[in-house]
Amino acid sequence: MAARVMYVVAGELSGDAHGAGLLRDLRGRIDGLEIHGAGGPAMAEVAGDGLEDWVADAAVMGAWEVVKRYGWFRKRFYRMLADVERLRPEVLVLIDYPGFNLRFAARVRERLPDTRIIYYISPQVWAWNKGRLPKMARLLDEMLCLFPFEQPIFEGAGLRTTWVGHPLVDELEAARVPGVERDPGLVGLFPGSREREVSRLFPAMVEAAARLRAGRPQLRFAVPAASPELGVLIRRMAGGADWIEVGDGGSHDLMQRAGCAVVASGTATLEAAYYELPYCLVYAVAWPTYVLARMLVKIEHIGLVNILAGREVVREFIQADAEPVALSRELARLMDDETARARLIEDLRETTAKLGGSGAHERAAARVAAWFAENPRRAVAASPRRPVDPG
Image (cartoon, rainbow, N blue to C red; front, side, top):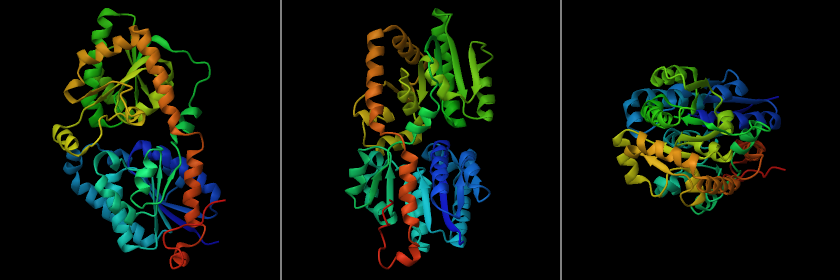
């Protein structure tokens, strides 16, 4: 049996988790599937030796940080492009990571026009650059989006789009702890999954925690480190405070046990919302990156929950506002104001209901499998931009 070849690229831990679920389902749908590309440890476990684990180096945040590592990214870009040209995959799946992946899509479309390009976890161009939508429509064969409001935006640009729902629903339900109760004396600190992000945000979290504990000595604080390396950094930055527990992973468990939390902007804010954890959001990057973002971003809020709700559900502390006094006051409010706390929990419940039901990985895999249903190289003349619908 001839192998069916696909190439897949994810550049961050969240994309790696979603990609692993997609690949796992595809394995059961397509006989002889051969997976190549770059991702993280979860994807590599499913794909095997053909997929390289690069996320520890690739997951940088902010334009300024990317510029400083331009040479490294350029070298990897052309190495991966050479792999694609050699392998000639039927399907290329790009998972989030738009700064790299959209450029990669353009080169692959130019050099391998028969390869079908599917984008999973749509880039948030609706927030920062709608002008790129027509170009994306020319480059991509299909967009698989997570949020319902994204579908008409991409379809309006002429790009075939399927709303598959958010894979977090399945992942978070699988991690739900039955019967767990919140501990009002436990505060979660979630400083992010990147070293630079942790370095910027965690010191303010530690000082805010110390301020709170000065008046509430019974409080305990817990931090889930996204990797062993980050665990070493976080323990060092905690300065030996025995009232801060640093764990290796376990973020979903902590989100279900903590009474409240402060969470770095990103996927973790959506995860915390799904578990109805009262929290506030923090965000801080290099000032050149922030100034550039302010020039480009066209939306009022940066938190995914607030964007999904279309209003402020959780309070956002951005750049200079992400400082210890403000954070400690907000955490105290979440602990003491029962009315505000109950209203926030209800808002979180209503907002995350918009993520869709379970089965996002299966729906995404069905769309990818549809492009394998006929050999694209045979079908290109008859149907250059439309796959056979699954089922």
